[in-house]
Length: 114
Length: 108
Image (tube, rainbow over all chains, first blue to last red; front, side, top):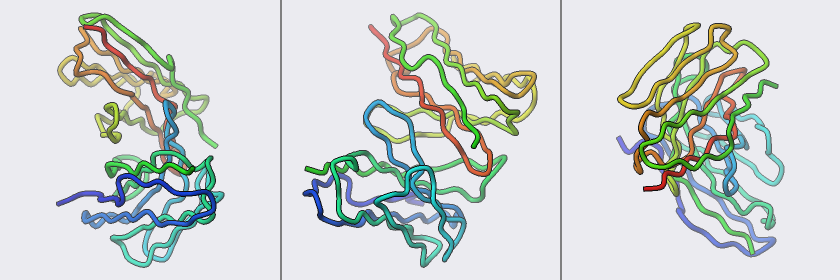
């Protein structure tokens, strides 16, 4: 199993540009998540999904959109990129949510908005 | 929403010294998880604690869950340079919430 795969690993965007961070998992996990991590800081939940066709906002959803058309894929869309969106983005997945379920993270996507 | 507070934010130790990070919640937790993130890497699951007063060990790492299930600690005995990174606790409310993390640096 590849686990959670994120692309691209690095990207530089200009202010106002849009892009999509791709995320795929091959563990047949129901739950998928997008987190952002600013330098030296913790993880903030952007959006999550409990299954195909179902998504919900996390702590910091503004400026982002997601979709979940399949169990495997959970892309994160940045519209009108702003410098405040410079961060490391982690996609993650888990079989379920709640007691006993661990989260598996992708290797991260480093995004710089200039 | 549920929050977990983690202290200290940062600790710099001499190799061979011990290290402890603490995670506290104002509410009772059903369980708590610990993750480690190496510099430039992604968080990796270390362990989960479920029972009140539970203590688990992984080599030099000792994890403890408080009797009231409102706090937890991670203790590393005789730190090594391979221990550097950020240690996060995480707890479930209606979704998993991460603490801010403790950054550990080890001087050799």
